[in-house]
Length: 185
Picture 1 (cartoon, rainbow, N blue to C red):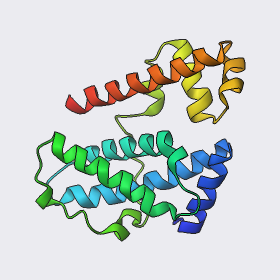
Picture 2: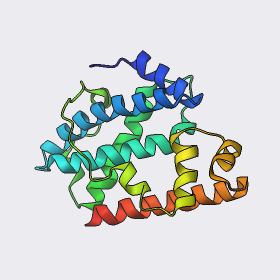
Picture 3: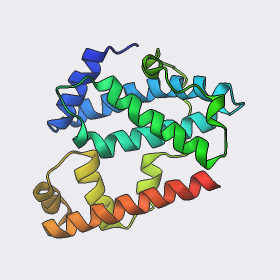
């Protein structure tokens, strides 16, 4: 299934309005496109599909976390491409692959046709969230995954609003450290 720019943008706008189903559909559609993009970019360097899958999950997590920075008056795919490209550059720097091996200036390729291979990722968000303390996990799921407000999350988790904010900060920091640690392994 190919998803157009208009369809993706519609999902993003609904997601920003708190529609959890649209948010999930957006991340699934972007995952397929990013998977094809990363596989193509890494193929020339002799990299494995699992490394592409790791990059997909890093990019999807970044898109999820940074979605509030998206300007609804702009196209969505260039915004996604910028995030995907930065994740690729970071990966290549971490793994000491030459940037000359992978052409990065073809912005139109960021939104390649869908790749229907359903490979499992080593950065499964659910698995990572299970490693967080219960209050941090509840806060992260409520605000970052379910799109609740801080007040709604506080009510759901039985915490104060400031407790939710602190837990989200700690959760994001912990998740970033877990992903970085696994990437080095």
